[in-house]
Length: 493
Image 1 (spheres, rainbow, N blue to C red):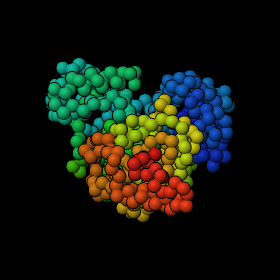
Image 2: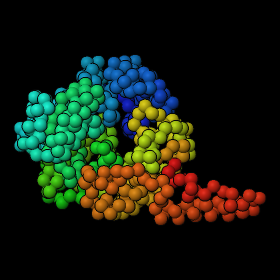
Image 3: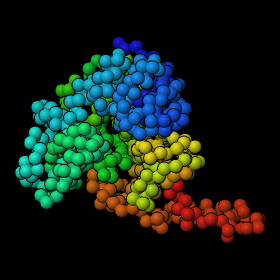
């Protein structure tokens, strides 16, 4: 059993705050390993102490193994929690922690290495008879060989980086004429992002749902599953909205969950992990396994009544979980990612200092926030400000609640994607649950029209304008001189 009193958080933003608060509830000390850009951040203010590990660029700080290890040791930490992204799925980092007798709060380095290489992961799934998408993952990486294999598989195909993640090193070729450019582009991108240019092919499923299963290997070796999530609403392979559970028929979801448990059991997996599948025409196929906490873990926590971060920490300490042998989900939860970006300019990041912020508290509303008024949104990192999560007894009521939350959330200082999210939640395909991974490209590929607001927003803007005007009716300027919020895109801020 590992004795842990202080945990170093090797991450930033909302996930760092999330981990720090879980540690505080468990009575554990925390130290934030932070970059220069984040040394006055909300996470830094929340932690017991901070340790500067490098400059603002990720390569100098959050992706620098030596600096993170040095910071954890110097601050007297017993363990390191990597959060998600950055070094969370880096087997060398997990091994370096082990070598320095720091408890890595996650799976073993061997598990990370196994599933981090998508080909070795597919080989494991094939060995146990799991569901695989037709593809090619051979050592011959020549364009000639890959073209021949693509023709055997049948177009369209998707080109993926072996060590990829987050949508990088991933290209779609719809015809043989597209393939050469797709392969060369994927190889360049993969080499730059992951240090390996090796790629593989898969049949491209163009009307699939992205379904993932939350699994957890506890300290006794038992693999728990906490049912599935639907993550089909994506932009350029990056998730925007996630929900738990899915709208799949129960018989199909049970098969998917069973396959996920079988895969994790074969790997003797320990800790939190997510097995991802594509589902099309009532068939499902293994895609990958993420060996870390997921961004979207809160929706599972909401429907299952568990705390996955505390479970990670307790498992790392060798403690048993208090979960029952069988658990059932209750109700429906939805999460959307709140980004500092301009939806009227195609989603380009919006940097700057946050002004007034307001997240509307209410029953079964959760806000995982990484920034507060006065904090700086920089160009160095992912522009996610917060995650908005709601729970209700049915999916339709959860959608209605999220629309209300989006209407009442206020962010000044930077542009946000709230107008885009509101349009997605009002789209018929999202409401009826039929959306696939093509949903965003099909309906929202273009930037929003800056001159158009939905009717409800127009009414809100006009009511605001009227009330402010009445309040100033006795002044010499009167309501006529007030700035009209309709023309100032008030809701985009």
